[in-house]
Length: 66
Image 1 (cartoon, rainbow, N blue to C red):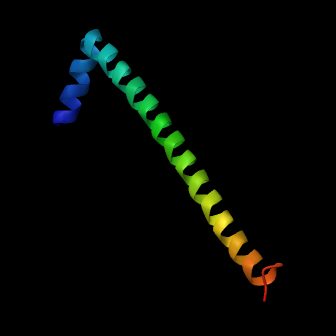
Image 2 (cartoon, rainbow, N blue to C red; image 1 turned 180 degrees about the horizontal axis):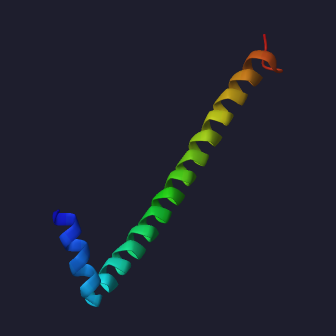
């Protein structure tokens, strides 16, 4: 019931609508930034795993084999 009343108030008042749109845009930008940071972090982790696994395989089966 409280949510319905709040929706009716925001429809009547254009200021609330503008503020909510700005908040949505801020949230959208923050979400994009967080996703980008997570993607970069994931790429770095994947690269490090690849380097570790490839060096381990090279050490086991490469020219470093005794």
